[in-house]
Image 1 (cartoon, rainbow, N blue to C red):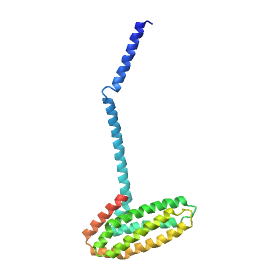
Image 2: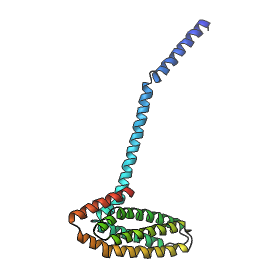
Image 3: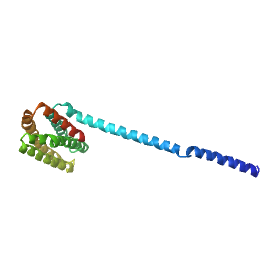
Image 4: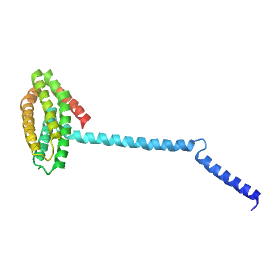
Length: 211
């Protein structure tokens, strides 16, 4: 093969590579298209994630919202927490994983419940004239957090776990009876149907935040 032939062949090859490069790079339009497509996929992923999160929140708050007025909804949440106590008290020191999982569920349930009461119901209770009672209930919530802290830090295979849990349950049940049997019925009797609907909507909005 002559030098001229080699030069011509090399020139053709370079030209071919150049054309290939220009088709991919050029003015960057193809790159821009690819980036735009990637951003579109990313945005779609975010949208799906947000939709999934909202769907999960709706599912978590649904039992409360479907229970009815605010007092019935809170009573339903009380009952759900008592079932968690039942399940936890049925464990043994060998069930460390189950105790950890149930405690996590209880912390979330009580956190959402407390937010609804502290941000909506207790202020309404104060407005109805029961300032001392509302402050007392709010004070109880501080000890709820204390018990959860103690359970979190107690070895899950320790016999002390059930001892703390038993004391916690006694306090929760006293608190629940005070709300359901005395304070909430008295407050609901003092407010109008429209006020009840407003409180219910506000309470569910607060619960949705932590659902």
